[in-house]
Structures are given as C-alpha cells and as structure tokens.
Length: 58
Image 1 (cartoon, rainbow, N blue to C red):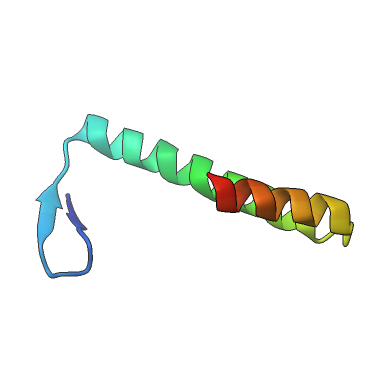
Image 2: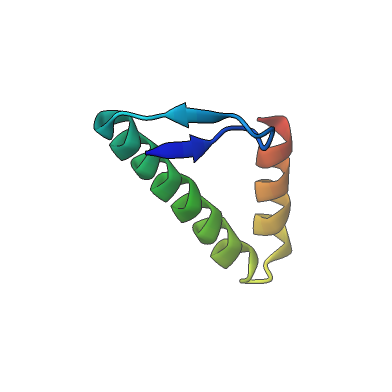
C-alpha cells in the first residue's frame, strides 16, 4: 500500500506492521483531538485557558 508523504508527490511503501502502527497513532491522535474539543465546548473559561496554555507550551 502506498501512502502520500508530505504532499510533495512522493510515496512511501508501508509494511503491514507499519500500517497497523500508523492506524493506531492516527486513532490516538483523533481521539485526543475530539476529547479536547468536547472539553472546550463546556464553555468553562478556566479549562479552556489551561488547555490552550498546555498546547502552546508543549
């Protein structure tokens, strides 16, 4: 399977093990993103500021 790399037209062949790892990391990334979105949607300014401070300092 070929996966686009960086948008410059190059492709990388991935082994099945790498494909599983890539899928797991993508799942983890989107899970964290959606959880942060739900936390921010509570409209609590202190939680929002703490999340933004943490993201900007990392």
